[in-house]
Length: 187
Length: 187
DNA sequence: TTGCTTTCTTGCCATATGGCAAGTGTTTTG
DNA sequence: CAAAACACTTGCCATATGGCAAGAAAGCAA
Image (spheres, rainbow over the protein chains, first blue to last red):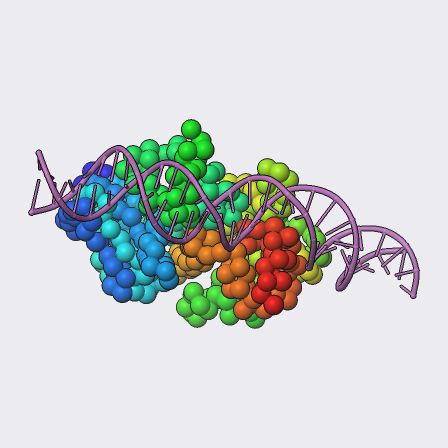
């Protein structure tokens, strides 16, 4: 349970943290290619990755896989869009290696929010954290070339060590063919 | 003060709303091209647009203006990235027509958050709302062509009636030249 | 209104990215 | 280990978008 606690220490005072952390379920395990979530399912839990890597993706109108997001150990994972919209999942959430998560049902989370404003404060802070991340990624799309976006990823071993290039390509908004050419150009 | 109240009724129960709405300052007026905020300034308030339109922009490394966001009457406005990061503004926020806003200092807002969890609930919900919006815009960049993104805007009179095309172009992530050609192609 | 400034369009050509299909190398699985 | 599946690269050519500069149109100010 250690890293789960570490994660929430950024958001919740020490006095209040135990009840919150203890409300997370025991570990759930995923093999490579297992799905944590599929389109149409209820996205009624918050999950913390103890081990492994997930990717969030969907199929566009031409049937091409588009990877929208990655999550690594020490992070939350899920279809955040559906979670916040309170709608059914629109994305697949898939383990891309062996993974372990702890999760908390959304109903439990909401009860905790009612019992202690510190927990609600976490919910607010976390949504703000998500906003910041997505805004920065959006700005990157708006103002940078695919090559510049790729160079940003190069600096982060999380992307370069565990993620197949074809997933990175669609995450960058380009085809795997184009990413291959960009890589050739750089070196 | 009417529309301000209407806005917050989506987030805050009727019993609690008056104190919140009354904490907003009296109206502040802006002429066309006036700045609500400039890079480096403190972004220590939350502002509600009673009338008019603002745009959020910055200058990229080549000195080109990039419009990041628009806000219309009935919406909040500010440099949300800085507001959530608790850092200095990175963007210009400029009136693109005569505008009126009411605002609340961030310090007042934070005190309100402490007095009533319903207010904190608003802060959480609003950050979630922002997340959803930015995620959808990001997805649009990741998966759509400039022409498809432009067609989305066409459906919304807010964009097409008040915003010069050159601002729309950079908002779409393209040059005004390219937008002009896309428009020609469509019609 | 008149003139000035800003916005928008267009032509010419350059660069970025895509689509397809073949070829090579690597991983998975039985 | 061997076959199959998957991941990555490359060549050829197409489409999307950019850069620049000139001109047309629209908006603004005196």
